[in-house]
Length: 328
Image (cartoon, rainbow, N blue to C red; front, side, top):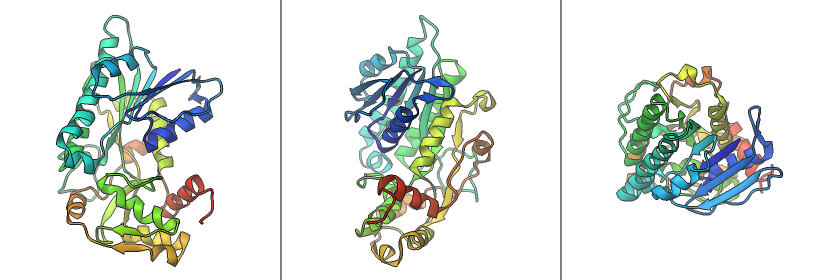
């Protein structure tokens, strides 16, 4: 099996690559080759018996994307994206990457199959940002996609393209609407949702974190572990039950910022929680006010997707995976 990961240098892309390299198979098929691509050169991984091919390229180049698809990978993970805050600040960049790049990828697959049959599985990382207020108590898969951000609009268009290209038989697509991933390792990025991770990640290593919203803000979360699990399951699941409804709300955990902080206090103690400093940011607060808070993911769970049980578990997973299992 040949697997292409577009967006391999990002946090989820790296973790997905490491998992595939470690397992050396997907489902019952051995992995022969991993093709890694991103605008920043993906980090090499150790994978005895697996050919690793890394590309530094931008998906806004049609020729570059076509060259990747010319290898005819059996499975394509499309993870590349400009995050929410940056897409809102830089209109042209957001549409170039999140929309044009997605269209170039999907069209490259379609053209590759014109002369000789080719229909790979495509797993597209979408987002709960495709939904916009006013919301019901719980958002189901059939709720209207009325995003209130450019990022959400770009992802919603990507979902429509994925469904139509799958309907036409150009590829076998699955779109997974990821919850906000928490706790994201590494440094803060430009995502407006970054503070959900920051208020846990920094205090866990004794550093101050800024909270730009009120503690009663509620949101939908999943850990990096769960996100990788979603992607792997989407890659191997039977897509027949999806029909033409190719995009799924992923299961997650609904929690307020206050509940996050309480979980931090239980797991890491009062001193860690005391490192959170409140400093309201009107731009971030206004964006978050238009985001979804709770979801009905029964369709996804009935198809085998599994999420985190509690925020305590999310924090403990971060300590185990990123901090060597112990707090500094």
